[in-house]
Amino acid sequence: MKMRLRFALLLAAILGAMAASGFAQLPQFNHVFVVLEENHNYSSVIGSRSMPYLNSLVGQYGLATQYYANTHPSIGNYFMLTTGQIITNNDSFHGTVKADNVVRHLLAAGKTWKAYEEDLPYAGYLSPDVGNYARRHCPLSFLSDVINSSMQILNLVPFTQFAADLASGSFPDYSFITPNLCNDAHDCSLATADSWLQTNIDPLIQSASFQNGDLLVILFDEAATDNTNGGGRVAWVAISPRFSKKSYKSATLYQHQNALRLMMEGIGLTSFPGKAKSAANMAEFFHP
Image (cartoon, rainbow, N blue to C red):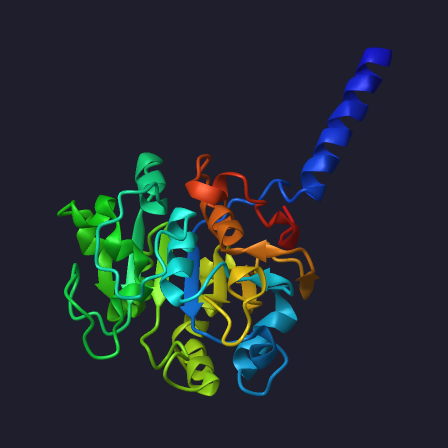
């Protein structure tokens, strides 16, 4: 009897320590989606009149009030979100990344993925920027696991495919979504980005499939005028109608490696690239 009691106390202590450190158990999401916005400070986004739609989501779901990008400029943050490493801070980078990455782990676990890129001319396009499409905002297009595979490269698709996949209920396990340089607030206003989210992403949130157990993360890659913790304080919002704690706010310090860990572990992966290996999983935002 005493041994059982000691075991129970030990187990409770371990679970408590895990929860406190950010390694509590995550719910299992059916699909995960991430949308990247660009180059604005937290204070310009959260609570501002510029993004009423995004702030309406904050009022219902989860907000990380101390979330920081890792570096400047953009490309290093995009790589941290997909490889757990900065890789490069050269926005003109056009090399091949052989480092461990999210696609490698997805494929090893039998999971599916797509990168939905607004203004991408056609599936598998790897040539230089065209129109408002910026390749540096599509980190998956640099990964050797993608560009060296005739099958995987076709998972780099124009954003027009998103509405079709929503209508047919054929989303992959993991979706990386990049608006173009105007609609991500890089070249245009936050109001433009907010309108794009409401037009293109709200139909996903309202869909029966998403309501039944999916996760969407909307975040900014880096701050505009802040270097705190490398890339400055930015907005990060997690939306899961089934699993989100209502109107939850956390003051825990998180960065892009935490978001990467959350999205991977949230669809059942058990191994992670780079800094995601030791990153807390952000489970505090969700109930079982």
